[in-house]
Length: 137
Image (tube, rainbow, N blue to C red; front, side):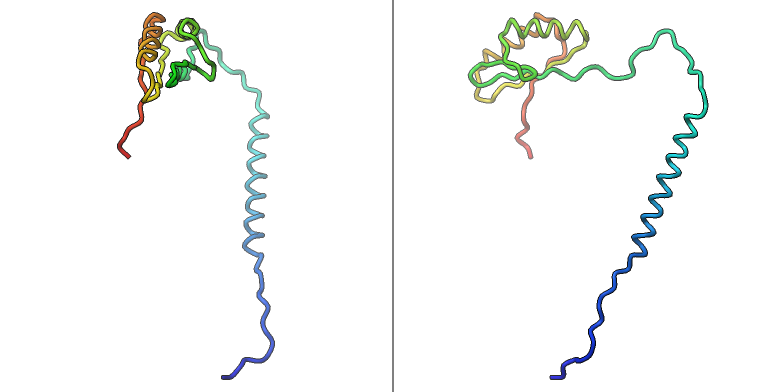
């Protein structure tokens, strides 16, 4: 079996494409900063508006968790039913269309979930949802 003899060629690493990309990125950022500086050069008098309504949507729904042993928590705090009701009343005063989501454990006590729903009703919360996990994958 003949063996190749002679010098082996060393692999070359061509850096030209990488240098091209680096130069393009430098040019891109230089041009971008020039536009930002040009925008600051003009003194613009902004118009005023009398009554402005917020553009954002309302707050997210409050999530109330009911543990299997009947503990109630909202926003990471353990609450009693009276504390929960005062929190819900305060939330409804801040935003009248406040929504809540009640998450009860599957094997938990149903009475506690009904107590939470009753407290939400006394706080006049209209948008109430019950969380569940779909068994269809």
